[in-house]
Image (cartoon, rainbow, N blue to C red):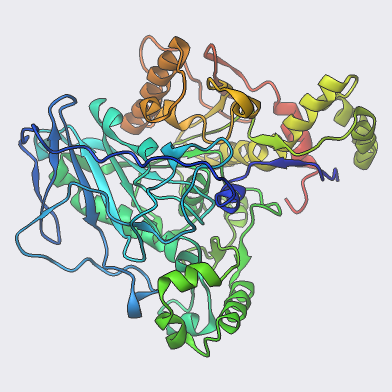
Amino acid sequence: MLKITLIVSLSLFVLGLNAQRSTLNAKPKAQPSTANRQPSTITTIQTESGLISGYYNTKTSVTVFKGIPFAAPPVGDLRWKAPQPAKPWKGVKKCIAFGPSPMQPKPVSFLMIGPEFVVPQQPLSEDCLYLNVWTAAKSEKEKRPVMIWIYGGGFQTGGSAAAGYSGEALAEQGIIFVSFNYRLGIFGFLAHPELTAESDHHSSGNYALMDMIAAISWVKKNISAFGGDPDRITIAGQSAGSASVNCLLASPPACGLFQGAIGESGSFVLENPLLHLNTLASAEKEGLRIANKLNAANLRALRTIPAGELQKNAGGFFAPIVDGYVLPATVSGTYKKNQQIHVPLLTGWNSDEGFIFGIYSKEDFAKQAAAFGADSNLFRKYFPSASDSQSLASQISLAVDKTIGLSQYQWALKQNENSKPNTYLYVFTRKPPATGDKKKFGAYHTAEIGYALHTLDSIQRAWEPVDRRLEKLMSAYWVQFVKTGNPNLPGLPVWGSFSDHEPHSMFFGDTTIARLLPDKEALDFLYKSYPGK
C-alpha cells in the first residue's frame, strides 16, 4: 500500500483538532433585530412543551424561531445520558436568539475557516440542546418539505449559531430549514463501564448521535405547526455533519425519521486511520483512563466535575463508536450487508480538500508505484509524475481521494445499488476568491457550504458574478432535492442519477457541467487496494 507521510488531507476530524491553532480574531455576527418586524400568521407556535414566539422578517417573509428546547438540559445526573424530553413551560417562550453553543475549545477562525463557520465565543454550555426553525409558511396546512442541517467540526467544535448556517435563503425558496446543537467531545462521546451498566441498552458513548435522533424526532412531531411536512424530512450535513448523516443511515433507532439524505465531504463507509469507529470495549478503556487522569473514582465523581474543568483537562479525542445500540455495527459493515436505511442521497466532495505541509520529489513519488506490485503501471497512469507540476497535482489528488473522495464515492455506489431510490454525486471545483495565503487552499473543505445554503453574504470574500450564479444554482438543486428526492429542475443542466454503470455526476465550478465521473477508474483502482475493505 502507498504510504503518504507528507501530504495531509483536511479531514472532518482534523478540522476539530486544528480549531484551536489559529490566532485570527473575528467579531461575532450580530443577532438580527426584532424592531420593525411585523408578525406573520404563525409567529406563535404550539409545540409539545409549550407555546413559543419568533420574529418575522418583512424583507424575506420568513419567520424565524431560535433557541427552542428540544430536550432537557443534559446536566447533573443527565450528563452522559440519552436526551430526555424538554420540561413543559407556561406562557409563551420567546425564541428569538440562539441558545448556548455546546461546550468546546475556545471558538476561533483557523486556516481557511473564517468566522462564518465558528460559533460565538460566549455562551458555551452543557445546556445546549436547542434547535432553530426558518419557515415562510403562512399556515400549518402548507406541509412544506423540511431540511435538517447537522454542522461539522470534527465532533469537537461547532454549533448551529454560526452565521454560515442560516436557513433564511433556503426558507425563501419554499422549504423549512432546521438546525440544532448536539453535544461535542467528552460530553457527546464518553464511554465508561458504569455508563454502560446503567444504560437500558447496555451501551454508552454515542450521546451526540442520540441528540441528533432526538432533534429529528422533535421535528417529526412538531414541524406540522410550522407549516412543515413530517413525512418529507431530509437530513443534511457537512464534514462531521456528513459523517453523522452516514451514521444515522446505519442506525436502527433513526429508521423512519427521514426520507432523504445529503452528505458533503464526510463518511465512515470506508474507514481509515483518521476516519474510523472505535469499539465499545476500547472506548470504555479510554473512559477509564480519562477518569483516572481526572482523579474521579467513579461515575458519580465524574458527573460532579464542572463542565469547564472537564473540557480543559480531560484530553482525548472523541467520535462515534460501535456501541451495540445506536450503532450495532460499523457503518462500513452495515453497508457491506446492505442493511443501511435506503433513501435518496445527494453526496460529493471538493476538489482541493487537502493541504500540503511538504511534498515528495517527483522521483520519490514515482517510486511509490512499486508498492502496488503488478498494478504499478496503473498507479503511474492515474497518478503520473513526469514533471514537478504533474507530480504535485497527483499527490494532491491522491491525498483527497484517499481520505474524502474515495469514501464519498463508495457511499454513492453502495447507498442504493440494490433498491429504487436515486443517488446523486457532485464534485465542487470552484476556488472561492481569496487573497494572500488563503489562495493556496483552492476548492477547500467547507467551500461549498455558502453556495449550497445560499449564505455567501455571511462570508467575507470579494465575491464575483460567477459565485453569485453558482450560489443560486447549487441552492436551487439542494432545495429541489429536499422537495422531491431529485435535484433536477426545468431549465437547469440535467443531473443524472449515479451508479456503477452510469457514473453521472455534476461538477460545480467556474462553469457547471454534468458529466461522467472522469476519475472513476482511479477511484476503483484505489478501492481495489484499500486495506480491510
